Image (cartoon, rainbow, N blue to C red):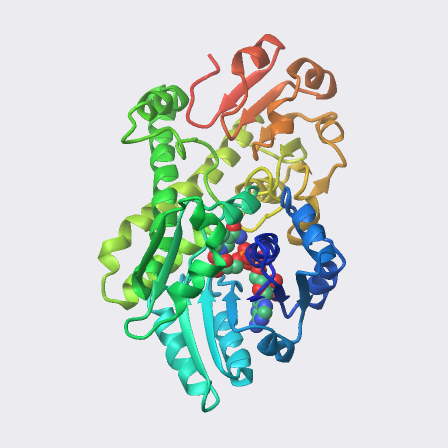
Length: 440
Ligand SMILES: NC(=O)c1ccc[n+]([C@@H]2O[C@H](COP(=O)([O-])OP(=O)(O)OC[C@H]3O[C@@H](n4cnc5c(N)ncnc54)[C@H](O)[C@@H]3O)[C@@H](O)[C@H]2O)c1
């Protein structure tokens, strides 16, 4: 099989499919990425992936190329995992890359082929791509488009790909070989009773965006309650624990704090709204506008708290931001709340120093003007205010007594509600947190 697009999704999918025993060719337009992957280097941080990559390169089951001709001859089963970022100046998804794969690949195909879309796309895309493929396929060649949305989480991508919690496959009505092929591709997880849901194309496309919209809504729900807690004097963490015991609600994704970011949730809820508008159903999803707004307000609130710590002016103050990846166990800084806060503080006049165990290289590219430290202790040295912005284990494990020795002022704002407030207070720290009234 081939996998088009070797980013977070595609490189993981390619390596993990080889791990399941398939022969896989990963294809990308980025020469550097292909060169890195071919030499056994994963060009991003994903725990466990380097080992899977190396093992399968060595076994000869996995290779990478930028050559579409080679890809067209290599396999009859193709996965499409290229990016669908937010279109500039619009909420809609940019489908340029997805269409480009079909436009370049299909004219080169001979015989019978199935393309499984994995990218997150607006509903109706698969049907449009089928029409496009039909118009481009050489005579005698048949190309079926099926949709197989991806649910992997960065940080757990290998596990989520090899043992997914469900497999969703959208197939066209009428003649289709996609389900039988998918059963072969995913034989191993299916043997382990992984739920396998076969739907029409539209439902499969919608499953993915609906799942992400639900998760975003859950996070923004607790962050909206956070805003009330802050004004009324409540504690959102105790509240989340209490409502989370109700198994209809559940505690997961009720972590109040700086909110969601990354390359998926923000752009996916916006693209969902845009598509609803195109379908004449914009009212159905206007609540997602609120979900988005609540999420962005948390970043502003953090900047306000930082300003308040300096009596209203950040000018010249030394602030350390712990974390710049959008979540722990990832180096992904796309739409990262942590980096957004660090950037705003810097633009507000603060001298900002950032440290993140993995996200620094990517952050430097997006925000070269911030200060970057080599370690947490270097970052903390002489800080007047510390902001915990990404909940890496390393930051959860910080020893408040030891850190107190490094900083100029023992003042920390926990943007992720992960610190043990009592032990930080005991070490002399003023602790503030989003959604909690902690400082008398
Ligand atoms: N990252 C995740 O956790 C995740 C999870 C589920 C779904 N998704 C979805 O998967 C898709 C890809 O996301 P990602 O995070 O891997 O993005 P990414 O930006 O890391 O990777 C996209 C890759 O596609 C390549 N590409 C662009 N045009 C190409 C072309 N014509 N031919 C071949 N390759 C091409 C790019 O060079 C890049 O390497 C998106 O739709 C995203 O919403 C991502």
